[in-house]
Length: 116
Image 1 (spheres, one colour):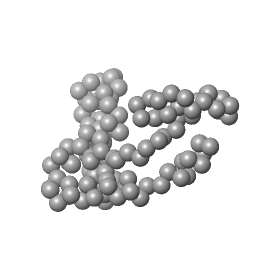
Image 2: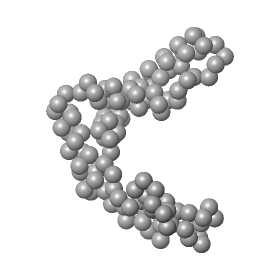
Image 3: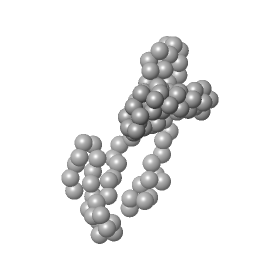
Image 4: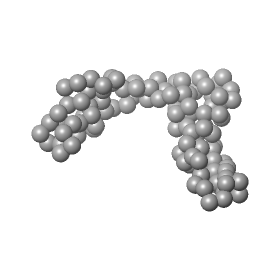
């Protein structure tokens, strides 16, 4: 067994790859990740999709024949981080409560059952 930045790698005879990553502790989401969970579907999804389409079209016009320099996932994360940074203190308080609740209520029993 060896520790790798908070994780424990356990070698078993069951896995063909030879190692299973065993998560030892629950981690809080980053504030922007919690904000994403709270607001993406209800507030930002359509705008992100529209702006992503605009970005791809602009990139294609400015850089013909070149692949887009970022993925939709990267674009969305940057968008959400920017929106979170400009949110009200009240929303940031809601995000912090959500982050704390996720750590307290998350159950990793289901994940652990697959690791045994």
